[in-house]
Structure formats: structure tokens, C-alpha cells
Image 1 (cartoon, rainbow, N blue to C red):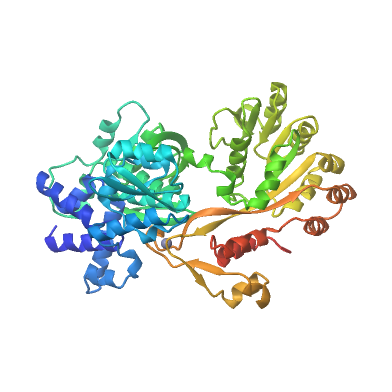
Image 2: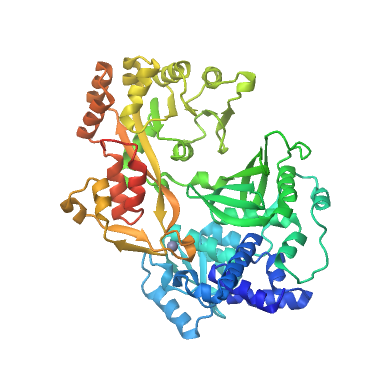
Length: 617
Ligand SMILES: [Zn+2]
């Protein structure tokens, strides 16, 4: 590769926000030490992913073809995607920030006010930063300034003091913002960050036989480097990148002349890499080997799983491979076990609703239903619920399809249709296991419904889910299924309907004027709209210019009361039930959405996008 090409790719990587001057310096040193090219140094050290380099090469090529250079193309990008200059603030700035932190410890100060010094980040290991949710900001001979959610957390302060041998000063920053910033800044630092923990046998040899042999480090053409780079590393990078992007799935998809890699982030697929066709077979084989699938079988779909540790986080990967026209496609579902333990409030419960919901889930008996379409976050809510109420004095048993997370202290049961272990049969046996709390993954048939309701009437707290648009429709769905109305009325204690919307990125949030069409879709009068502040994410390097980062649930909670019970027994329609529920205190999903729009948590467009199926909100 010529120096000019190298420069173009470096420029492009900077424009993409994945490379800064500090990393570049490190890479240059490594390149010199090992006598390899700069791009290869970035690649082998793991500073920049193969996927990013492939994207940069493509973009640089397009820019060159268009008659410009990559840097000219980059200059046309919005300023936000260009990373800040290296974090080496003048000493005065550091001192100022420190004094500021001590003088006024503002809760929810924004991190944007501080420059993050790479040296400070290096001084505190990732594990410590994660454990106490601490981001080091500045460091000097005798002091270290950190951001943390609670500046009075003496355990955290002690741990950092002991590790760094410096006096610790703290500024308080919102925990969620902090977690994201920790991911971002440690991500930039990371080197050798991923360990695949299973399978235990060493299979790298058999992969390398299929992959082109790793040759001497010759700096010719980037695609050649990707070919020579061990496929093991490519797969590791794809997983690492996906986990850091908080992706839920990785799709490795053969196309006619390349392999497309897409990841699902916040519910949407986005392309992260195009691998050369020559890497296809080795990449898919590597994934199949990790998942303990049969690599000689390429004509049939297969399933498997493996575990990995990325940035000290334990990750489970469920793998599915499927023959497609251009070869086998692999989908890796990422299950981050740490995510189960988010609190109900973090999921999106407003404080008033959380009080009501917590009363319900601490009842000794009754049925609580969570409703919403597939992918609306029902199981996350239920796992967080079980995690909230679990206690050594209670037997909590689940029957699920599939078990998404294993919570310590809970008995998870998996249905297995191949051996006729369906929901109804599993539930019948669970009832003989002296349960206190039961989670039935889904009510699909009358037999399961009747058994679950009987359990709820006889001293058990039962949770389950239904696919209905709103909370009141759950009762009519059960009635249509054949459950006796008086049984529904007497055992149901509450119904929670939910949807997921994307969160506005906290780094680039700003107020906006809503569009007239949006107000119309939300059915708001100008007077109502004038009392709501609308927000959007402008797009920045933290959110990859989407304006969003992560998701939050919108909830609608129906708490059973006598009027609704009467209406259920009377056989009222879902519409009538909804009217009664709203009259007796249920706040509709739209209300929750508008509160979160006003608070800057989500946008009007997101609320509208989940409302289309819900009439008469
Ligand atoms: Zn942003």
C-alpha cells in the first residue's frame, strides 16, 4: 500500500470517530517496533476493528474515485463525527475542573464540561471503573479527578485511592451517561480485550487450515492484509464491536461478491462491515466451530451457543446458521447477562407507576399480565420484576421458551416440544413443586390459561405475557380463549402494557419545535402541545450519528378495581373496558410517551412509531 493510501485510510478512520491522535501515536510506535505498516499495526493491536478498516478503505476508495481525497470527503461530514483533539488539556484547565468539582458538586453535571484525559483512564482498570461506575477525568502527580454517580461513595473513593495512590476528587454525573462514557473511553483504550471462553478444546489450528496462512507482515494492499489476518481475530473483532455498540444480534450474510455484516442496535439493523468473499467460508466455519456445530454439514440449518468475555463482561452467544443462496448465513444473538439486573426504574417506570406496580408484585397471590407485541421488552420487565421480588424464603419457578437469562436463586424450566414438554405439562408439574411465584412465559392455549389462573386463585403469584395491543384487551383475549369471565375477574390483579422506544442520545440532545404532522398524529391541540417540550438527538460520535442510544419502555398499567371486575363479568367489549379503566385512573401509553418526550428521554417520532397499532389512545 502506498503512503498516500495509508493516509487516506487514516483520515477516513478519524472522520469515522474510531481513531484519535493518541491511538495513532501508539500505532506508529508499534509499527516501527515490529517493522509493519501503520494500518496493520492498528489491526493487529485491536485498536481499530477489521470492520472499521474495511469501511474506511471503501470510503477512501469512493472519495478518490469521486476526484477528492478522503479528507476532503471527511470535511463535508458534520463536525460532530470528527473526534476531539487528543485529551491533553493544559494544566490550568485541569486545575480549574478540579476546583470546580470540589466547590460545587452539582448532581447530574454533564460530562461534556470535562475533558477526559487518556492518562487518567489508563490509571484505573476497567473492572474498577465498571464496578463503581467511575470515569477518571484528570490526573496529576498527587490527585485524580473522577466522575461518579454518588460522590459520597466511600468504597469507590477508597478503591480508587488505593489503586492510584492519589487523592481522589469527585464530580457527580448521571449514572446512565457515565456508563456510556465509560464504555466509550475504555473502548478507545482497549487492546487485547476479548477472550473466547468456550469451547475448551483448541480449535484454532483447524480454522487456520481453511483460512489463508498468515504470511509475513508485508504492507501491500489492505484487502490482502485482511486475508492474511487470522480469521479468528476477525470474528473476535466482530463480536467485540457488536458488544460495545450494545447490539442484540450480529448477522453475517453472504452476498454474491462479499460478506455483509450487520448488527441490530436499538431494534434496527445497521451495516458495520463488508468482508471480502474470500473470508466467507473461514468466517462462517469459525463461528460454527465456536458454537459446536458440525462444520461439515452446510446444507441444513443448525443451532449452537458459546460464551465469551468482552471487556470483562460475560456474554452468551446463541448461534443459528441457515443455508442461503450465496452460502451459509450466521446470526449470533448476544445475551449480556449484566443487563437483566437493571432496576425497574431504569427500564422506564415513572415513580408514581412504579409505586403501584411494586404493590402488585408484592401481593401474596393473583395474576399479573404483561402485554405487547414481540420485541416490546416484556421478558426484560418480567426478569427485572423477578429479580426485584426474589428472596430466599420464596420458591420462584418459571416455564419459558426459551430461557433468555438465568437468574441466580430462581428455578428456570425450558419447554421442549420434541419430548412433549409444553407449557401446560410443565406448569402441571411445577404446581407439585410447592411454588410461591410462577412465571409462565406465554399463555398460548386454554389449558395453560386455566391452569395458570387456578394457580393464581389458590395462593400463588403468577406472571405471564399475552400479545395484545393494550392492557384492557388482555381480558377480552382470555375470554375469547375460553377462560370463564368470573375466573379472570377474581384472579387478575393487574395488567401492564408496554412498548420500547429509542432513547435520545444524552450527548447531543436538544430542544426542537415539533412538526405540525407530529402534533396531528399525537392528537394534540396547540394548547396541549405548548405545555410539552420536544427534543431530539442532533447526532454525534457517541450515537454514531443516529441521535439515539439505547431504549426505554413506555408503560400503561391497569390496576384491577371493582368497576372493571364487574365489566369483565358482564362481558363488556375491550373498548368499553378501556373507557372504564381510563375513567378510574389508568394513564394511557401515550401519556407515558408524552411525559418522556417532555423529559427529553425520547422523541415525538418514536412515540408515534409505537402508537400506530393502538387506536383510541
Ligand atoms: Zn449523540
